Length: 453
Ligand SMILES: Cc1ncc(COP(=O)(O)O)c(C=O)c1O
Image (tube, rainbow, N blue to C red; front, side):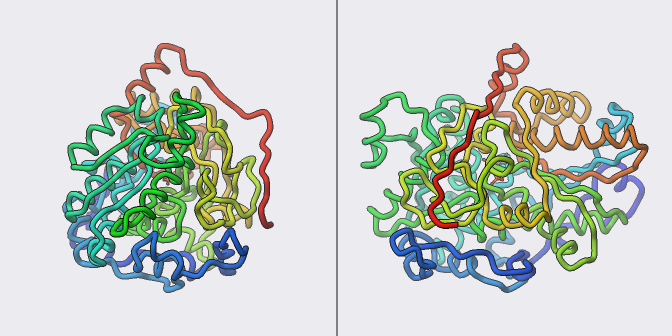
């Protein structure tokens, strides 16, 4: 491992031999067990057996496991190394100089893989466990297309068929991701689609329905239940997804150790919570054990304020009310998400583990408008050269604001954020921003019909 000053000032590259070989499961260290998912029919905790028709068995096992570390299978580790992992941890020195701040800003680079985001970390694991179980076909939804492309890529690498329901507005706004999924051999439909009964019902009411992630999830579940050798994969929210993403934070921790630095503030953007959980949980482990007093800040959109204005209650994970009930911060499964360009943040709920940590004040959350977010993304692009994803840009905004606060106070805080993806297929959003045509949205009022508190 590189311990030189260059590593401290530029990038810390972890040797492939030092890649973590286990994922970290935060369920082992939470002060109390997370509230269990409920069967919506009985309002009793759902039996893991009932989920076997939907998910691969090993993923259900991981969902409820309280083992602290879970071994990464050799096949998944091999796939990680080829993607390639470990990803570098960069120091944003030019951004620091531009802001004239004493703060030190570091970011983890999840944008380097072929699919362009962190989503491949769990897609590879989910494809592997399904293949191992003898499943032939995967079904899923995708918002901005990042998750869909990651699963399409992973299905191709593990020899599985893949069907994707892509939120219609993103299908139209982001044709590049749809083409990538097709190149990797997946079938991809705009959602609501004519492929499911639920989709047809919605299209009959509104043929131009823009779709939401909640609707696309209902469609993918219906598709799964109608096809025997198909299983469903989810790109965020659930414990096993967050678990796989901890490879990000485990690598980052080793990288910070190598340069004798420990972050004061760890931030990331939240759609369903997976990239941020993956980045921050290995650091949160230290806070939960009383070994560090790090500040954790989750960044979301003011247009979809699931954690800043949501209610902590049981809600469905989808709009068609098919999934088990999850206890989470939610703005309601029927919330009609405005057409913001950060498509991956357009989800009504939040991972139960992240919701719990926010509720218990281990973590803060903050919301931004998309114009201020794109302004921050443009500063990052001009200083660091990196054109980041619109979703990620939310935590870039936070990092810049925090660094500017340090400029006033003179504090040399270490601020870390997770660069969850690149924005090279989101250039229309940047174009709209540069043309001054980007609109900010904020709901006047949030109403959540609570099922069980
Ligand atoms: C680049 C990127 N970052 C963040 C997200 C938000 O998802 P999550 O909160 O699960 O990381 C997405 C979702 O599509 C994404 O594509």
